[in-house]
Amino acid sequence: MKKPSQFYKSLIHARRAFLLAAIVFSMAACATTSTTSSEAPQLMFVQSAEDLKVDPAASTLRLVRVNQQTVYFSDRPQRIAGHLKMEDYLKEWTAQAGKDNFGADPPNATLSVYEPGQPDNTVVVVEITSPVVDGADLIYRYRIINGTMPGNGGATALFIDWIGYGGGVGRGFHGVGVGYRGRGVY
Image (cartoon, rainbow, N blue to C red; front, side, top):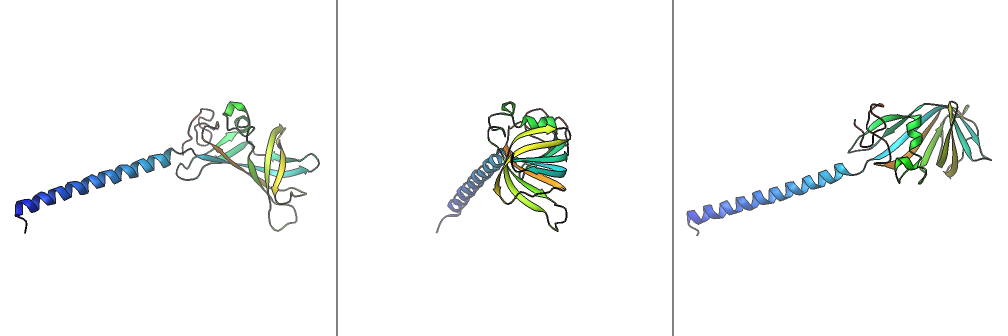
């Protein structure tokens, strides 16, 4: 049997080992958390329009009377949200936005259209390129990835695939400070 002084020394060593293990695990958890929170957010975009016109021969879709604000958001853990004016959104398609701009790597998008006389919305997945503003409309060239392009329009939403952090979307929530590079705030 151990003497009481040896027992207490063993207990102190065990306590120190436990505290050291707890510190190591805590540091590992913090390192994991900071890596996760510093990961580049992936921003998704949403555009809405009153109507849609499609020209299958030219492979163009026209968002008729498109909202002049494009909403963007990200998923957890960053939870960034805001909107861009049309001129700022269009910069995402240029080299000015960085090497991962939409012009260099065209995004996929899901087009959701409520066609007149149809009970449900029509959904088609497309790759979009070459945005051009024409009055109150926005025109894209498209390539169908999945689905069938609707023949007529109606209330339309275009859900545009992500762009990585540093793609040009600046700080801001609801347009505050848009245009500065960096992480948005929520």
